[in-house]
Amino acid sequence: MVDQSLLTLQKQGPNSVVTEGIHNWVFECHGFLHNAVLIIASFLFVLYLALQARQSFLKLSNGRSYIIISYYASLWLVSILNLVWCFSQTWECSPGKEFAWNLLSLFTTSGMLFLEVSLLAFLFQGNSTSGLEALTRTFGISGIIVGFDILLKAIYLFAFGIPIFINSGYPTPHLKWNLWVIHKLLLTLVYGFILFVYHSRWRERLPARPAYYKYVIIMFILNAIALFACGITGNGASFGFWLYHFTIVCYHAAYLPLLYITFLADFFQEDDLRLENVYYSEMKDAGFFESDWN
Image (cartoon, rainbow, N blue to C red; front, side):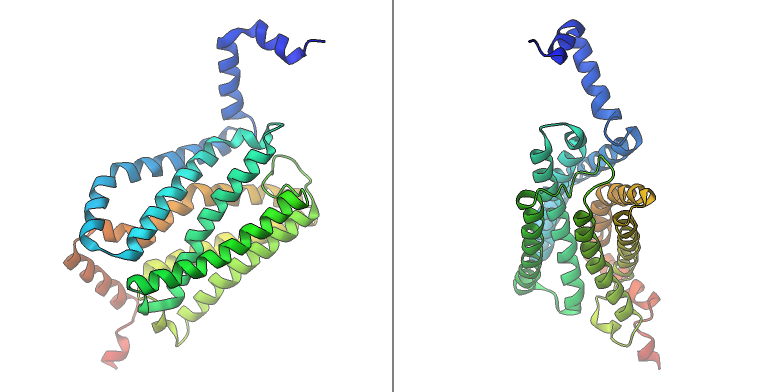
């Protein structure tokens, strides 16, 4: 017996098949707005990196900063992975594509988590971060944490068969939301601890840049919202499912540009003397020199 879908495709012709494919790619699986925001934001950021690549490479070759070079290379790799992930949204809703979608999502989210944890490790090391030793220590800590995270998620995905990256249907397994609650709780606690340190007498141990502080506030709020969404979704609230989707879109569309602005933009856009003046002004505005006057 001939498959009905094959007969339909033969009747439609190649132009109809292409049109239907584009329609499904743009409008199906979470809707037009969801897919458009992800695709446009990720594409524009990769395009921006490409347009700035020549200038950035010249700056990197002159600066010889191991941390900046490694972070810039990692950002390029993860940005391309995230772009592919955003363009592959229909895999999540396509039968037979579950394994490919889960594998792509695992690598993409792990790459973004590696950048996130690396920046946190950099912040915790404070003003002592410089040179190859700091790079090794920062990436070593991040690699261990992210490696454990990948192992745990792989066990959920491939050993227990729990679709932790497939959110095209509701409800989903309760164990999935337990995992995400723990994941978001740990990140929220870490960002909350950094905010506590910044407002305590130990804040001099953190890098004296208000831009990092603003980054921590944004990530604390985003992870707190995601934690709340995962918690109520696990208890059966459909609103939490929608809210969790919203945090995913925000994370994949805006996190990499936020990280670039916070950590790399000044290095590429400012000359050394002006950069020192900017850092001094930011430190003065943040009150790091008040004790000298007192």
